[in-house]
Length: 87
Length: 87
Image (cartoon, rainbow over all chains, first blue to last red; front, side, top):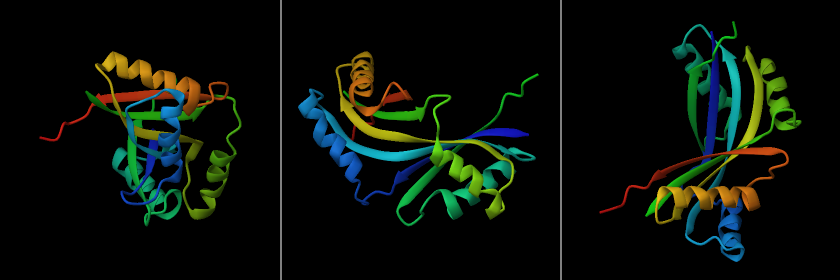
């Protein structure tokens, strides 16, 4: 089976986020008021082959821990659903 | 009202994604087979003050068009929900 996966990677609370801070500081000068707590993360999309959803989730979690994220400073959220098979 | 917003920014189809291509090429060497179509985007989280959901959505869409994304090469998906008010 093929699964569509989205891994959303965000900095952990308390880790400095200079990119988010820069956006937050710039917005009022552009006329956007009332925006708070800006955080910038990565989202990684792909498809993965696995026998079932549990297997796919285990594989993706292992990829996150070893390769896609830095668990010291980042949290990952995995979203996963069965892909529409064409035909 | 306060709304929690997630803006998911992905490269448009056909735009070169060297970061995604590098991840896809590296995974088999680490023992992860069956991963295809890797794309890397940004996810931007923040809270915004607005009178209602339509107003918040219009504000965020305007921010995306003018500031958060490059509409020539990127697509943005806006997710928005009313924040839990503390107390």
